[in-house]
Length: 189
Image 1 (cartoon, rainbow, N blue to C red):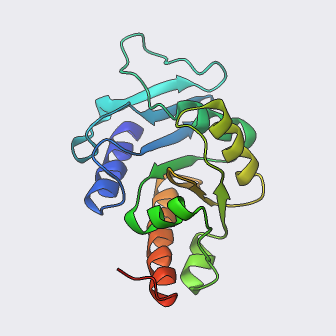
Image 2 (image 1 turned 180 degrees about the horizontal axis):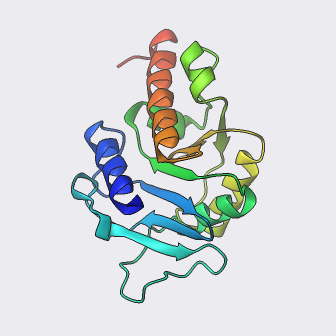
């Protein structure tokens, strides 16, 4: 069941320290349906019931009794509409990547072979309000440049993939690369 798998990936994201209790979200595309984490749920205790099924075309939940979807649903839907082969999106607030979010700088994925091979390139999205159409448009524009990961200025990070596993792997490797870049530049704590 996709919902159980998604809940597992979000619990793992939280346990690994890659997001906060209520921060971040995960979505997976299944044909004309997008499954996304519900708004404000405890990521350490996320369950299949905390995943909302959304119609890709109209953006509405498929079940009337569904919990409210993530505030970032519009951003996820915009990316899926713009990239029909995209299968999963993971948004989180990893601590080392947050330094890049504050400064608005990209992570240099050329530093480590693993990061270039797994992540590809990382772009930067200008600051925009959470859940806003402006953020969705800026993310789509940055992803259209071929980036598999994005630093959202003042916000968090996004990892794109064919499935939840690949998106998670890209986020985890990008976080390690961000840490390595900061240490190599002499900016360690």
